[in-house]
Image (cartoon, rainbow, N blue to C red):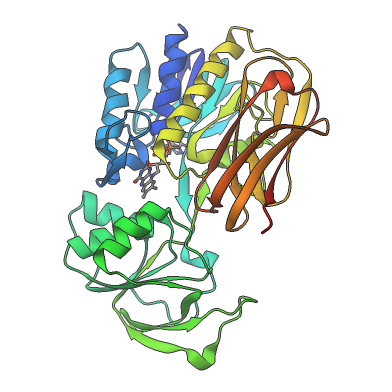
Length: 417
Ligand SMILES: Cc1cc2nc3c(=O)[nH]c(=O)nc-3n(C[C@H](O)[C@H](O)[C@H](O)COP(=O)(O)OP(=O)(O)OC[C@H]3O[C@@H](n4cnc5c(N)ncnc54)[C@H](O)[C@@H]3O)c2cc1C
């Protein structure tokens, strides 16, 4: 019979993707003992299936594939005392601070002083949108398609339409074209794409794959396998103009309709959640409402660029080490509030003091010719001009903290004329 194993570490890192790896390296550098718990059979997370290039331009100043980017961190981890438990799923966070995990050896209790949540995100499934019609085989999420094609070397169909213009869908449009599929087009319900501009150009325009904005699938047709879809224009009030619906024959529908943080461990532990991002509410240290539990990467808020994940995770690792060593400054805490034009702001709190404050946000729509304005105590502390701000691209603003003495407001101010 499998027995319960007990382990003791200063810090446990849940998830061995790019966020988990970067944060673990910082914890180890601070001289603390740490363990990475990863449910997969290898480290690297989602990067393992992203065999295209475009990773690392910012962090490593070179263009890498996903596996190459991950390997650079894995190689560094191997040179440290960081312990790694693969094929091990963390089931819950128990009373401060015991993690319950499971693997083929049985149940594991891990006693720690601090935790970093780096569990990544997952795709929104078909059920998240109202897809009418039948439910034949041939409807697949973009991430699953990516795994099947890139890791298992199998094709998913011949005549393919993509629903949603998220980055994974755009990347898969190009990938499926490389593999000989007829990628009929990408259909996006919104009047603007939800993926990065560079992916629109490099994955669609360069391969003449049409992007249809304000147009979506209103009915799936097919008995055993998808035989086609009806698509229709989407009106301003988001109703469909069914008078203009047209039939498009296809055998496969790839869904790229958004990502959402995998955040159940935090939710089950009662950590306060950010209803917009789907991650936890954190302070500037990336510390959640449970003292000593930190969160970073896609489990905190969905990032578009892995370089930003690594940098954020390094901050989480450094702050976590400071927490364990009782060095995390605990001065007066203030709120950071998003106003006009911002869908969310991360973090939600800062502490008075010196140094810098890194603010991440996404806009609630497309803004052209606009200033990002940061105010504290009624006074402007930062103003940055932007030609365009897109919801698809996360924005980062750095503010010097010595100018801040009260709640911070951040908003977009359109320049008239
Ligand atoms: C399809 C796709 C294409 C992308 N393309 C690009 C690109 O071209 N350029 C770019 O810069 N960025 C790209 N990105 C973004 C970037 O790769 C990701 O943002 C980043 O790798 C996410 O890292 P993460 O560690 O937060 O999450 P993940 O890599 O998802 O890692 C999370 C890990 O946690 C593990 N885990 C989850 N729950 C548990 C549990 N309970 N117990 C144990 N382990 C658990 C998972 O198995 C996983 O390994 C892409 C992302 C995706 C999804």
